[in-house]
Image (cartoon, rainbow, N blue to C red):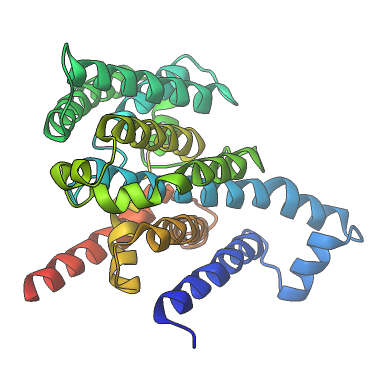
Length: 326
């Protein structure tokens, strides 16, 4: 008999390709299902084929990869910090990425320079936070959290400074990137490959994630190597965030909301269910949010971060309200 968890996972497996097909069909020119499949698999209409494969597919693929990576990072961060409010940006990773990307935009650089700079900034910020939190001894989750929050405030101040001195001609692009922007997505498969690699690297950690969320003492008593496990989780979460930010800019709420929503839907905190679900739901959610951002006030395109905030804020408030009722 199909269990509810298996049924939810099956629905998420179906949601992923459906969300990608919707993203491919909706745009300045909408395609019917028949036109969509003929454009995808036949070259009878070269213009339609090019629109689908060269414009819409790279954007949809990047959105799915970024959403899946953010949700994965959210799951890992919440275990690492044992804080249900932890999300990929709480350790200042997005702040560092944003500052370096804004420097690139301010210098008039485009193309691969913006996501490349964001990736470098995210990694440097990660190293900075880890070095400051570690100091001369070992770090704790509270020390890491506090260091990350303070570093994020510092990056925020620098972002404000860059926006103030930016010329008007570049300010719009900078603001769009800060609110999440997939309009410059050009890589079809690199993001998806990165998502698959991160997911595969997380698989050996599933049992340790279940144990670590019970607390350090219990994990140590059960034979888990705390330092080694925390290092791995931290590196994977930071790397996931850095790749996601380089693909889609600073998109909020996905890493925070998706793990909570999955625990609510699946009814368990076991990571053999949560982590695959996070990849599928996070990816699908960002693809659908970006499709709405493109369609809701067409031909104007909204930053995808506006849509994730519009979805995430009421959902998060509902979950808080539901939690208080229990």
